[in-house]
Image 1 (spheres, rainbow, N blue to C red):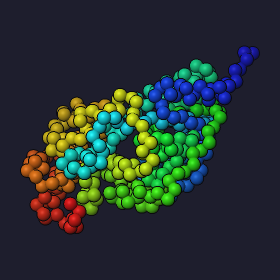
Image 2 (image 1 turned 90 degrees about the horizontal axis):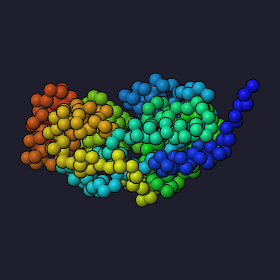
Image 3 (image 1 turned 60 degrees about the horizontal axis):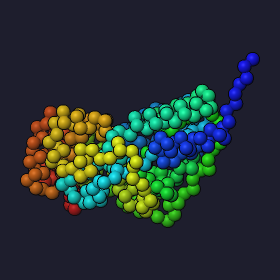
Image 4 (image 1 turned 90 degrees about the vertical axis):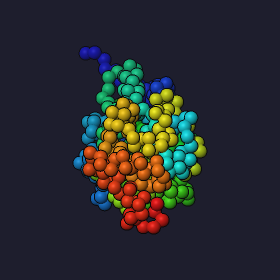
Length: 363
């Protein structure tokens, strides 16, 4: 009978680091698949309804916290990070402080990271197979029910901060995560230890109070959820606090002291496109659907679609100064074909007319 080759897992693990770096990943680690404590945390979060309209979070059941249910035979998870902070962009806080400008979360300024990272992860798996021989694996980048932050923490990439994002001591939190589930029983790395200490700057920094306590996030109040995941009307009570954030929110990361160690993205695809680092709200609101399709295709923003794009900008215009530019932009879509857009435009115009029922001082 032919001799069965036993993979040298220690050698494969050594190869992993060099190959991951060659493919543009900033860090890589390996962990086992024990997520029992994180599963309890997830169950409580779902039971409290904090996932909002993200029904898929509950529908996936235990697949998210039990990797072998997603890929039978999974023994290890390879976790990687890729830095995304776009170089040569307008200062983020300066954009937030100018209500005539639109703020786009810094991760979405360039091209969509999903395809880029999935391709690199597939290449990484192929390079490992060239040495180890064929093995079972699947690659993931926000593409399946995966507890990516818990796995990354267990693989030594960083700790989950009080804002619930992953933080690396030497790189802050401006990075993407990806995973390879594998049947290879590679040596594991030590989990990361937490270093938030007594700092809680991220909690009061959240404009909508979505960080309800350390390590507790209510997605229903999170601006990223409201501007990206929510399909219908944005709750009126939360609209003033959204300010000029039209896609996502970075406030909790902007105040994190560990981000002084953040690194610029190396990959050119993460550079800002179409001047989205500091665009004027009125100019974005004037885009036609064809403009949106042409400019946002290939961007993470494209997934929300044109209607929600206009919805979000209408809210930001409602929070903008009552200038002729702002009012003209809103009037131009008062009769928009979308009822969702019309409702948000009506709300915004009412704020500028001074007849909104929002509490004083919220503007």
